Length: 131
Image (cartoon, rainbow, N blue to C red):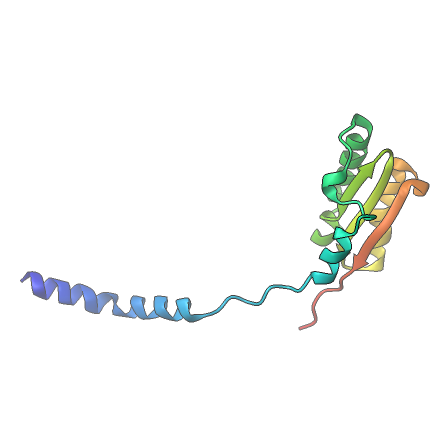
C-alpha cells in the first residue's frame, strides 16, 4: 500500500519535476560590459561617490538636487539615479540618462542649487534599446 502511494505521488509530481529541470538548464543573460566606464571611474582625477564630502553644506546640496530630480516624474529611472557628488560646493553629475533633454534638466536642477559655474556634467546619453 505504501509503495503504491509513493508511486502515485511520483507520477503526479513528474510534470513539475520536468519543468524545474528545464528552468535549471537555462543560462542567465550575459552581464553588460561596462569596462570603459569602470576604468574612467578609477582615474585619479575623477571624483567618485565615496569621495563626496560629509560637511553640512555639501550634504544639503546633494539632498536638494536628489529631491528635485526624483520629484520630476517626467524623468526616466536612469535620470533619477544619476550620481551626485558634492565636494566643497562643487557638484559632479555622472551616469546615463535617456536623452539630451533629460541631461539638460538634471544639469539645470543641480545648477539651481549650487550655481551653473559649480556643476561638472559627466552625464552620458543611453537611449532605450530598440526592439
